[in-house]
Image 1 (cartoon, rainbow, N blue to C red):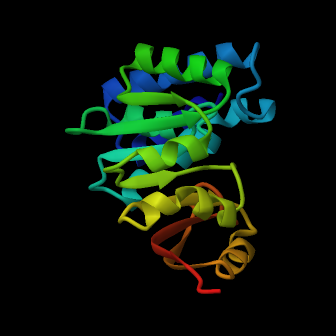
Image 2: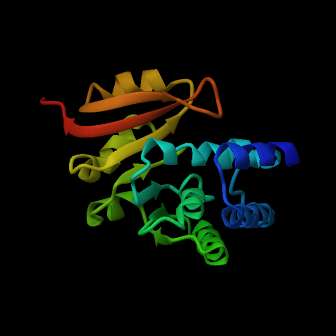
Length: 211
């Protein structure tokens, strides 16, 4: 891990000492659990502060007043657990983490306990959870599925006022074109601060295209 990179990420996002300590603990946990459960791509561990932490933290600025978040396919807690660590000092801030893999849920629960992150871990499939949740301000998912599939999963939320934030790679525009065949929605394509070729798709006001 580059100490300079860590310091730059912490400075750019104005991270407090308490949050810094919690993020350091998250990185230590991720490194330890990676040896027994492949939580992230092994090559990305050396770039964890840029590839994972900074990539997650940038989402907070896109919905600054949001307090209730839902992260789908949370895996190693990216971005959901990182968002919870960063937002835990905010009033009423809470993140739901949806993950079907029990061992990954064990990592999420244990790391949340150690860091004091305000989360609820849902060990379940996405389609069985999303329709049961209300009062969600933002739903997010990274490296999980196509935008078309994400919109299908999150329809109960996005049709009732929730904002969707979906980090995508260089194929974001193509995924938007495909999704617009099935859905009508208001969207922004926001440049990623961590990858010049990546975009974050912000979705609101979702409805199905009339047949």
